[in-house]
Image (cartoon, rainbow, N blue to C red; front, top):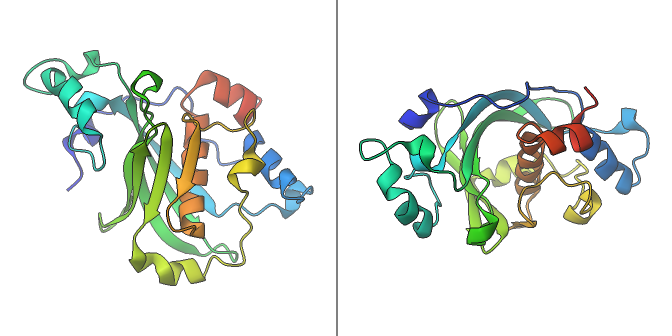
Length: 218
């Protein structure tokens, strides 16, 4: 069962667009795919579900203990969760596609942006939307986000081998919409890198500077 906070989400500041954002085009150009028509994106954005305060989801998988302690007095029944302003959760539905545009996975993700003063990376989780089975963890280690996919996804991984995915360095420091300094992939799997791409795309809709500078012109 999805957590109760999913019924109390606030909207993103921008509506979802499925066109390829500027930051992704530039990252693919760095891989020497210079023709935008040749770019294949293995992520299909489905829905920006919304955002909520850290205090509304204290039993989120992989939340650092320090944030549970800090937000304890703000949780429902003890205070107002919306008055807790350290970090914020973002909920996003997306699909993963193979190179023939077939849907391999229908996913739901939540991640928290963390807080620089707390020396956080991102944390959260990814589930199959229709079964609620968790397929990946998003772990905060210092100011780095670490994505770890479940071993059961290896059969899906086999269907992604012909897909080109920009590396972290291809995104470039000035072009990357990621809201933590770095992201790592525990098993160096393409599915982990695709989840990282989905996080970056979601970040475009979360912040004014990301949307205009790294996302879309209007």
